[in-house]
Structure formats: structure tokens, C-alpha cells
Image (cartoon, rainbow, N blue to C red; front, side):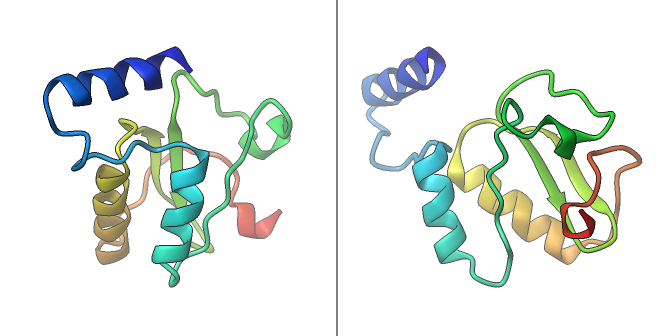
Length: 108
């Protein structure tokens, strides 16, 4: 959308476009192929609002990281693939959970 285009222009102006990958559906799929020890699910909340349960999405992209029993992270993530990679790595190392978040997809 327009926000992604603005961020891409800004990264070009700053001369960092070769070091920044933006999170969008295509790079999300690529990331899923690179990090094979985890399962990635792209959920379009307009097509599958029931997957959110009672949760609301306030901004995009909103990321939920879950194990089979609980939410490890649920919140807005800046649209940079490298930040998502770090977030996934940190969640894998920690057992901290968040209180709220959507229902566990593995149980649906």
C-alpha cells in the first residue's frame, strides 16, 4: 500500500534499500522458507476474522507468535523482515508469554 511505497522511497533516499527487506506477503513466504523450524501462517483478517477471537487489530502489520499452547508475542511490528527475524529468534529463546492474543491457531 501507500505506507510500503513511502518506506521504500525513504530507504532509497537514505541509500539503504539493499540492506532492508520490507515485510510483505512475498517476503513473508520467503522468510517461512528460510526459517524451516517454525510454521508460518499468513492470516488475512478480513477473510478470517474468527481467527482473532476477541482481539482487535489496531495497526498493520500485527504479528502473533505462538507455540502450541500460548502466545509468545502479539502486537504491531515495523515492516522490516530483519526485525521479524530477531523477534522470532528472541521468542524461541524465551518462555515469556503475553496475557492476551488471538486463539492458538494450532488448536483451531
